[in-house]
Image (cartoon, rainbow, N blue to C red; front, side):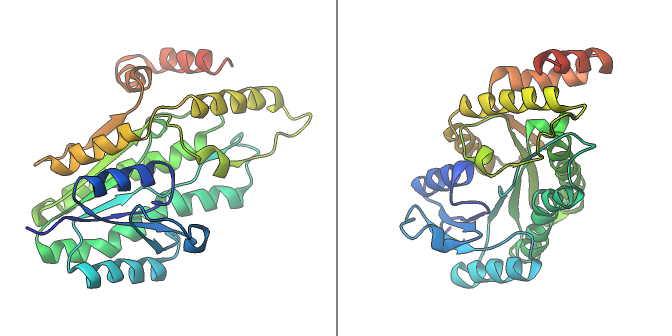
Length: 269
């Protein structure tokens, strides 16, 4: 069989770039996407296509381009995403809509675009990059957690709907990794005199520390290869430090109020 063809959204940097480089080195034909290819004139890790996941028409054109060039599309990795922080009460509503448009609607546009081809060729794999944060409500990251949690649930539904077509769909949930996500994250302003001012600023400082001390994205790339090579991919694949993965176990086992207390202590609230 020819090399498997992989399409990665948000492939120009961070986790997406690491995954693309690793898969290319392991014999896959990789296409990555970015909103503006002119920003990466010297990018040569794999082929970059211009695509904004928020625009269905552009999504469809980019997917068809790959199919026309390769004759197939075996793996879609929905990696493009943006961060958002802020108090639930004070985050501008237009920013809430924007983050859902990228993190939730975007992957849905991508999946709708690739599913007909995967059915036609008798199989395929979709990996949705969610987040460990998507399994719990986190203080001052509630909207980000909500976008990833929503994608997680849709993935669970869609994998059952498409199972008979030979298509596998799974969630890949990273913890904190050393990427540029903090630089592109929308921060609701810290409002002087706000009831949330001190706690929100404290949480922002802690979040930046976690990203700066994050793990190597290569760990995510290795997990992606493992998923692709699996005959029957699982529903969920958390990847991150032991304590981050442990938080998912504790979420299932502990009473809700006790788990909430652990989070409050962690965020020093």
